[in-house]
Amino acid sequence: MKYQSALAFALLFSILPTQAKLTPKVVYGQDDRLDVYETVNQTHLKLATATAAMIPSNSLQAQSDDSIEITGGTLEGDGMCATERFAKQRTAAMCSGFLVGDQYLVTAGHCIQTKADCKNNNWVFDYNVKSKDQADYVVSQSNVYGCSEIISQKLERSSQDDFALIKLDRPVVGIQPLKFRTAGKITDKARLIMIGHPSGLPTKIEAGGSVRNNKNSVYFQATTDSYGGNSGSAVFNFDTGEVEGILVRGDTDYKYDSRKGCYVTNVCREDSCRGEDVTRITNIAELKNIR
Image (tube, rainbow, N blue to C red; front, side):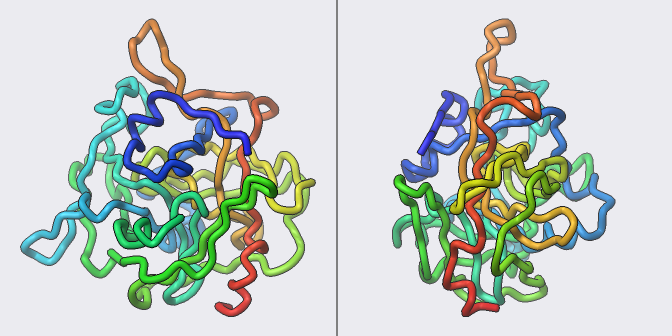
């Protein structure tokens, strides 16, 4: 398994389990990430509602009106250049996940490895930016769920299989579970959508990726604009809207700019760098019982 790390990534995710800290990603070509309020495609917005952020329980503060405030730092505060996109937004999420059944969620296997990981983190829906001038990050208590059980989990160095299927502490209300591929594999060079929480940020919708290498039976490689925190993100078929896989690893997120004295996004051409690895959703045999 090829892992690369950067100081900036370590600063952002120092409290993650070891494997979760070592799966950085990168931007290919133009940065296509959009906030929810910037997105006009209604299909993409519907898919985004089923995206959840894995946030440590101690970063969620109950308010007097039964809402939950999401606390944490910012990219700028963690050493990124102020010119970085989304530099002042909250960076609370450790990983991403997505709803596949009324009470079931899929993420990366390196995000949830132990019962302690399950117990100490919550899964938060609706962690996003709804307006340009948004300053606070508050969600309804009803959108915060616990992890009650790890149904299935893999993190294999030999095959590089990497996924987790967990059961939440109660059924999710008001959110439609995502449709996902159950057999076969995505076509070569297919267009992709990825939705998740890059660098711990609020939900970002990225619809400019494509399949680069489709030969491996366990995962395919893509050109999604991915960062640490995107681990566990759903990667969708652009044409069908079905989940094709789970973003799990890739190239280095940030590099140090000695002129500016801070970190900037690592940008690769669409046809360069190593590509981003996406575990095939069909690897999770237990999903057959959830349909």
